[in-house]
Length: 187
Image (cartoon, rainbow, N blue to C red; front, side):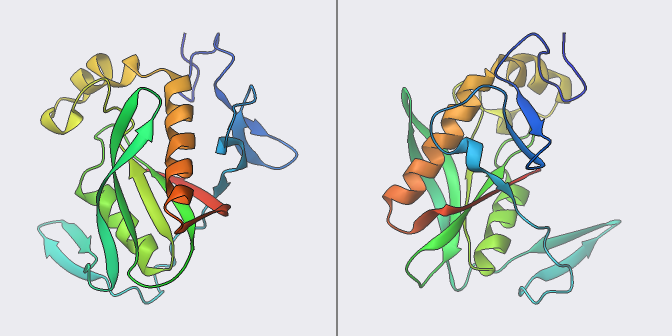
């Protein structure tokens, strides 16, 4: 049975709120970096980020120009192979704080990539790993229920945690990501 957070209440590896630190952490210790994740403060809507806006009907879309950024698709070594992801960071500099941009059920689509670019414009290395890559390509699905039933429900919590650890390991292995300054944002 799933609890309000969407986690199986009978599983011992779900995420819980650490009341002392007021941070989300795995219930059981998971090796690697995930236990050190810190929330990233929300983007200040008044902060100058170079966003371009265009209104289409009732929706305002925001697209960050890629100039001054190093952004694109990456392959992240994880467990049984590699998973695709999207990475954006400033074009110049030595090491950057790392932000994991955790997708929603629709995968790493243009909006998620744009969030990565926004954080990169603010000086972060932002990485969005494709959390469902092993179970299916959600970019080819448009029915919410189908995505949940055929893909999302098949992704084990342990795989998610392991993939997040692998993403942080990959970021630091490039020599450009600083895992001591690690945060996350979930869409």
